[in-house]
Length: 187
Image 1 (spheres, rainbow, N blue to C red):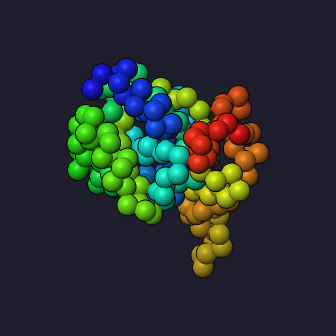
Image 2: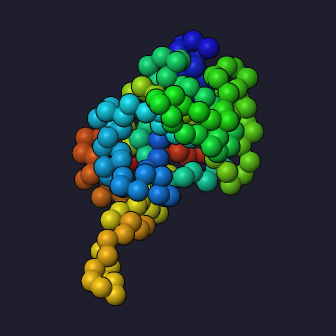
Image 3: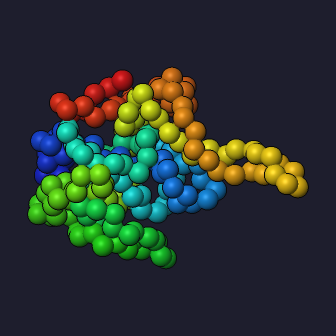
């Protein structure tokens, strides 16, 4: 698949490719907003796990807030899958259950997502285009917390709720989107 066809298919579906700030401890030391700032700075040498969101999707994405990405070449999309693809990096090679990008795998990765699951696209080198918020009324992020411990304070990573205004303040000047039944909408 060539870039023009990929971008046209994404536009036809009113789809956004989003790398989420993950709810789970994917990399123990990387929490919001550092994880997203690294993606926005384009200093990520490894492939990013993303989801492709479309109007009316029934997915349960892996995060509440993320970075919207746009491929610069069709080769930026390494693998696509209609579910969690079990992706990992080893020696800068991306491995997953996903398939190489084609017209058929593109459609499958969106059309075969089971309600409550999410699709996974492995992307490397795509351009950051802005910020995505799944539900502006309920934004959950991972953040460092200090809690009392038996031998003194402990530092842990826990979930926190933040507001849309906090997202705006964290990423000033960045376009912020959400997905509506009619397609992407700026907030």
